[in-house]
Every structure is written in C-alpha cells, then in structure tokens.
Figure (cartoon, rainbow, N blue to C red):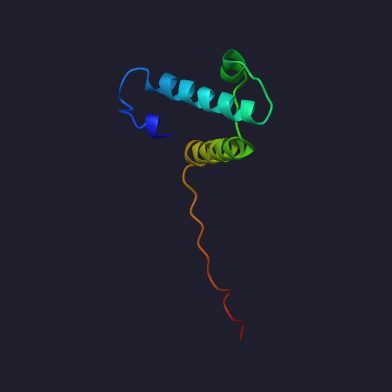
Length: 86
C-alpha cells in the first residue's frame, strides 16, 4: 500500500486510508468471486479476528490498570523465601 504513506497530521488522512482499503478489499473480493459494494465495505467494516482480540486485550489491561490505581491505590507484592524452622 505505497499510496498510504502520508502525513498523518493532514486533515482527513484517515478517511483517505479507509477509502484505499475499501478499494483493495473490492479488488480482492472480485478476484475470488465476491461483489461487495463500497458502501457495504465501509459500513459493515472488515475487521480481522486478530484485531478484535488485540483491542479486547488492550481494553482489559486499561480497565485493570484504572482499577489498581483508583480503587485501592497501587499494590505492591513482596516475595520472600519462607523462614527455616529450627
């Protein structure tokens, strides 16, 4: 996707990126016998499972970090060897 190399601070670059992805998905789909329209691909969002798993993991981590910091403060765990008897 050479065309995607762009200044990400430029207005509307995300929309342009999505347009290019939709064009790519349409071309790939046609090659394997699918005929998805532009509107369908933009609205129904192609999202690979790996991306959704990653986002879910990130959300879980953020929620747990917030809980640690806001509910009970930062927790410290000290690991020590048990003292020998005798």
